[in-house]
Length: 513
Image 1 (tube, one colour):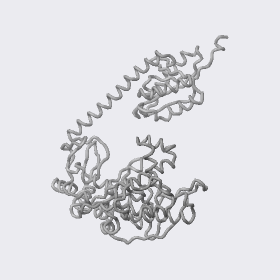
Image 2 (cartoon, rainbow, N blue to C red):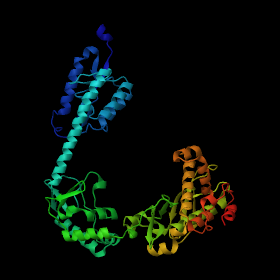
Image 3 (cartoon, one colour):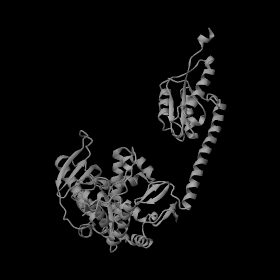
């Protein structure tokens, strides 16, 4: 009678093995763990314990994280109320991470789930049981970290002796018996790339030459397609390739290089000449990104879908701003749209003027359009396609309109010299204040800050300063463009702009000359 009154306790058995070794056996480690757990559950039959039919087995999964399919299914069944007790062979089968174990225990406690390790009989429903488990798990985590340190030390020692310890096999070599062996066909390609760079002395010309000859990165047979290689070279991978000291027979570890066991492909004299050429490239010739003045940063694209990144270059001490296609930055000239680069001042003024015209045709002047309203601008050789966010009093849908536009096709240097106003002719402090005002307006409009006071507190400035600065976001496009060009009245500064600036753009022009 007493036995019939015993409440049934549903027990889920969880098993795990870290490696694939031995899984092909008829009776493997997972089977042994389950047998031991089932035997323990049978010993508790008088308490109503019964093993649930589902198998929660994770073969070849690390205990260092919780990203395991069987464990995730176990947690789902716990949430569904199908389990009362979790039984494992040892606690490190469940997890080896103390932090993960704390999360699991918290989840178990929330559902009143008990946790039992067959060879280490503990009950997590008591504070002493949790303390003991935490102590044991701390040692398990210590053992795991100690093993990792041993592996890292072994790799470092092997690299110092010039041994290949695995990783991505570079072009020109094959991995055979844990050693790098020269691939004769690929080795000729490697030598050609080094010698050709010395001839053309330009990444752009080298990429074009490699594309014309069909030379691509090393092809690999991997399960993940994006790691299969066989793709055209771009600037970044090409720079890494030309600096790789493996090609002169060295092995690296943490920015230190040692004589390697593998044979060199490139003559050291040629390699040193390439390094000198790479180091001697004038900094002024390198396009660098600048975000402080780029009104269209993240919004401008060419007509083939490539983002136009803000950049600048310097010549004779003068900085010139422009936007350049990301495809051009990667050396993929064939993928560039009809406009590869454009002077920043020219495109920004065109967009501002288009916004004003569009507003006058279909919107009220009480809600001035700004760069912050622009979602996307697509630039082609003869037109701009501008997408703006929907207005608050409208249906909320984005609006798209097209305007005629053209730029004279010139090389980069000529385009910068003829169309971009030198920075020295502009009031940089005022320009930065305008950019900041538009950024703040965007944050307030998007709800990132609920009030000006909250915005001021986040930036550690007085709300009055924020209110005064925000008026610059409502300047007319003509006035904004005049400031960008440096055509504002001589001596005009932020303090000279009236504190109570009228919303009428005609008044803006009168006040600012």
